[in-house]
Length: 225
Image (cartoon, rainbow, N blue to C red; front, side, top):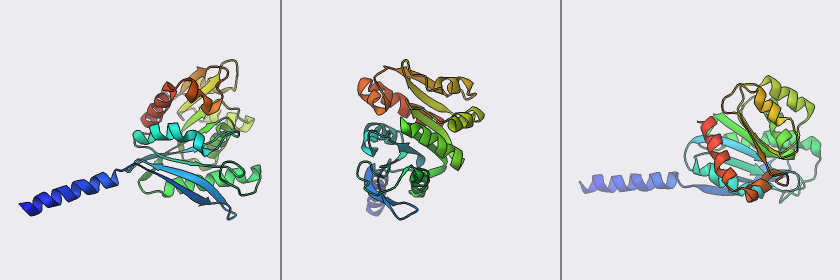
């Protein structure tokens, strides 16, 4: 009897340890050997994953508040600093961005517990087009979270053909990025368009309206369930 009780508590303790949420700062090794500073947020249990791509006047730490909300909903999150941003001192150019992002996605997929069939990408400002291009290249992205950013004509054309892909798009008031039309073209009932104050560009919107964090995290959890 004592053995059974002891075994129960050991198993319970193990379950608590396994389910522990963790944040890990580490280096991603790019295709050319460059070191990209990254942070991996784990919910401590199996679930979907999302790669968040920062805007070009910030760095990966700008995603902390949203990452925490996503992890609370059982979603694995990876962020990283582009070359020349934040803590990534590696030299390079815009030509490196696609391969660096592809490497980051592969890194997220390699993390224990990440469901490789339930992956999303999110971006703010310049990260919007980076997210769309990732979806186009990989064919593995099941949802897009796009915060106040322009897209190339190529990116717009791609999304016009992906009518079943769920999109959460946010635009600043008075700024027509074309995302509203894309959401209107979507056949996915979960696709959503939100308009925010004209001065809330990218993740600045979280300071203006903190309730957006829960709305976005709930949306990602729903479409990747």
